[in-house]
Image (cartoon, rainbow, N blue to C red; front, side):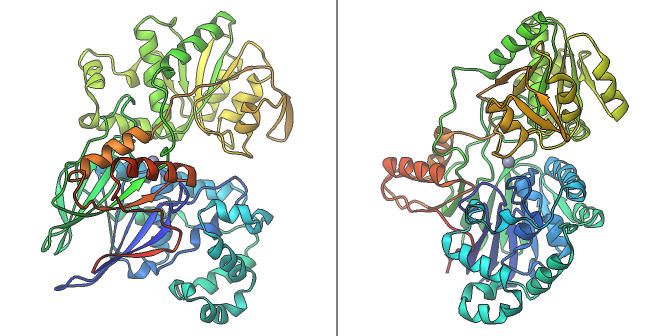
Amino acid sequence: MLKVTFCGASRTVTGSLYYFDYQPKDGKNVKFCVDAGMFQIGRKVNLYRVNSFLLFDPKEVDFILLTHGHLDHCGRLPYLVKMGFGGKIYSTPATKEIASIVMSDAYKHQQTEEMSEDSEWFEEDFLDSFGVGQKYTDILQEVIKAQESLESLKQKYKFLDKLPDNFAKILNLMEKNDGRLVLYEKKDVDQTVSRFRTYNYNQTFLVHPNLQACFVDAGHILGSSYIILKEISSGKTIIFSGDIGNPSKPIIQDPKMIDTQNHLTHVFLESTYGDRLHDTQSKPEEQICKIIKKTIAKKGKILIPSFSVERAQELVYIIVELIRKNKIPPISIYLDSPMAAAVTAVVLKYPELYDEEMHKLIRSGQNPFKSKYLQILETVEESKKLNHQKKSAIIIAGSGMLNGGRILKHLRFNIENPQNTIVFTGFQAPGTLGRAIVDGQTEVEIEKRLYEVKAEIVKIEGFSGHGDQNMLKKWLFHLFPHKNSITPKVFLVHGEESGAMALKNEIQKSIRQAEIVWPEFGQEEILWE
Ligand SMILES: [Zn+2]
C-alpha cells in the first residue's frame, strides 16, 4: 500500500511537501516525504504558524527525497530535523549545495524578518492564499483561536487526528513568544546538511529494499531533478516533475523528456504556468540590450534587483555575452549579493551540468563568470564604494522584490536620478516595494525615508525558470503510453487555480480519458493498494 498526503504546494505554488506511507506486502513499512519546502506568502506573514503546521510527525519519517534547492522545495527541511526527523535526505550533489545556501539564508532571514503577531493571519483570503480550502480555513481559524479546546476540536474534525501531539504545545509557544519565533536555528541547518546523501542524474539507488529512486535533469536550476520512484517487486512507478525548466534558459541543460515507464501509475505534475505560453518573440536579451545602450547614452546606472539562485547567473551570462558580441559597449557588471556570489561559485563547480553553448564558451576561454567585466562584491565596504562611482555600470543585487538586501542601499542613491534605469525581471508580489515601483508609484518609502521615483522603470518579460503550458504538456504526453490506452493518474500540484484548470482542460482535449486531480491541502490518496 502506498498512500500520499498533500501537505503543501496544493492549490498554491509554494510549500512543496508530499508525505507518503508505504506498506509493502513483504518487508518494512516506511514513511517518507518528497520535498519539504517553505510557504512564502506576502511580507509580514507569520511564517512560523504557516510553516509549522504539519500533518504528520517528522519523527516517524524515514527519508526525504528532494527535487531541487529552491526555498519553496527545501526550506522546511531544517524544521523537520528540529522536530525529530532522523533519516537521510536524498538529492543530486548540486542540489545539496544550493539547498545549503538557501536554508542558511532562510535561517538568517528569520532572525531579522518581523514575525510578530499579525492580523493578516486571520484574514480569510490570506489563508486561502496558501491553498487551504474553505473547509480547512474554518477549522484552522478555530484551532488557532481556541487552543485549549484542541481535544474537543479533534473529536469534531477527524482531520485534526493527523496533527502531531506537540501541535498544542507549538500553539502555546507561539502565543508566549511575541514575534521572536523562528522555525529553526543554525544548528538545525547544519544537522540537515549532514543528512544529505547525493546521487548523480540517471543513477538508480535504493531508499528501501523494495523501492528504487532516480533523479533526472529537470533543467530548472542547477541540480534540479524529476524523481522516478519504482517498487522493485511489482515494477509500479510514480514520477514527480518537481519544477520543470524553461528550455530557452542558458547555462544549464534543457529539461529532459522521460520515456514511458512500464507500470507508471501516477504523475505529480507542476502547473505553475499551466495557463501561460511564453512569448518566444520578445527575447529578454534583446530588451536588456536596448535598455543598457539607452542608459549608457544618458550616462546613467542600471540597477537590476534579482533573485540569487539562477536569475542572477542568467543575467550575468546574458550581459557578458552582449559585451562579447559587441552589441553593447564594455561596461562594469557588479554582482552585489553574497548569496548570489555563493550560488555562482556552486555553478562554477559543476561544468558537467552545463549546456553545449556554455561548454563552447569555456573551451574558447570565455567563461562568462570569469569575465573581466564582472566584479563579484563580497563586503559592505565594496558595495558602498559604488555610490561614489560616476561611470555607467550595471548593479545586480538582491532581493528580487526589493523587500530587503543590498539593492535597497543602491536604490536610495539612484532612484531619484532620471539618468538611471531600474530593471525588473521577475514577478513582483503585491505589497512589496518592487510592486509599488512597477505599478508606477511616484513616491516610495525606502528604509524609512521617502524618495521620488525619477529613474526610468522597465519591466522585462520573458524571463522564466518554469516551462510554459506547451512544455508541461509535451513533458507529460511523452510519459503517456499512447493516446487510447489507460493513462497514469495525474496530480496537478504547484499551481494556482487558473494554471491548474487551464492545464487540465488542455490535457483532456488531447487525451479524454486522462484522470486528473487537483488535490487540496490535507487530501489523502491511496496510490497502490
Ligand atoms: Zn523551483
